[in-house]
Image 1 (tube, helix red, strand yellow):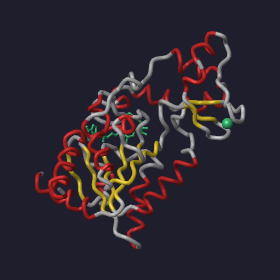
Image 2: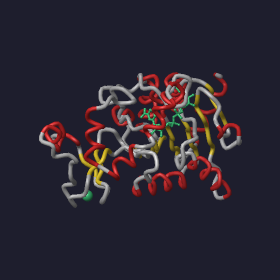
Image 3: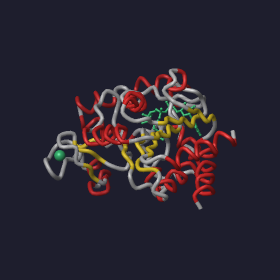
Length: 266
Ligand code: NAD
Ligand code: ZN
């Protein structure tokens, strides 16, 4: 393990454009359950998965009911707003400060990379702390809308300040397209990267899971080294998309890698 960490640190230092792709496993050590790990929400409660598939349909059919459900029902992932980053998030933020990591593309909606201090974060599946207009994709801080008051006065859904379109959570629901700006920027980052760190994802949710595969395809133009840091092997491991797997917890492994990078660069 120590040898592998030294090797990865060396590769990271040599890279010119390192990018991290992160998933729910990154935040389990912050107390937020993942979906498909051994204690995952879908693993323990397949009914919840079926229900989640209906959210987007509900929004399209009846935005007011979608909003009432959101505001009065329990959150599947618990208290995301008060969750705190763990050493894995801080390690990635540090790698960015050292001008090594250029971007994080995350499937997580929990805002923890930003809370840890990372600046360039692409929220591939949206961000729980924002609202997004269904018509023009503008994002807003929910606090601007006094949602509790709209609920009490029967004036939901909130409407866009720019185009009067209906607002939904910024979170991308099942069957909803990835917002065009984030999809384009993520693809551009994958096109540029020569080293990809894949952290805590089962790599089965599409189109996100295509990003490492795209990086592999670009290899005819430039070699991209793909490194997985995951508790369990994934299809990327099995299909030899990734070049290395460090099996373990992101909250332990990422700080060790950063420590090693620091040792070698100071
Ligand atoms: P997933 O649940 O499908 O897979 C998580 C993977 O991480 C599993 O393979 C698990 O073994 C591994 N893992 C768990 N804890 C780990 C740790 N400490 N260190 C390393 N690996 C660990 O998650 P996914 O691939 O991100 O897909 C789930 C989807 O659900 C995403 O699209 C995401 O939007 C959403 N989601 C988000 C959150 C969040 O924001 N924190 C939480 C759950 C689900
Ligand atoms: Zn709008």
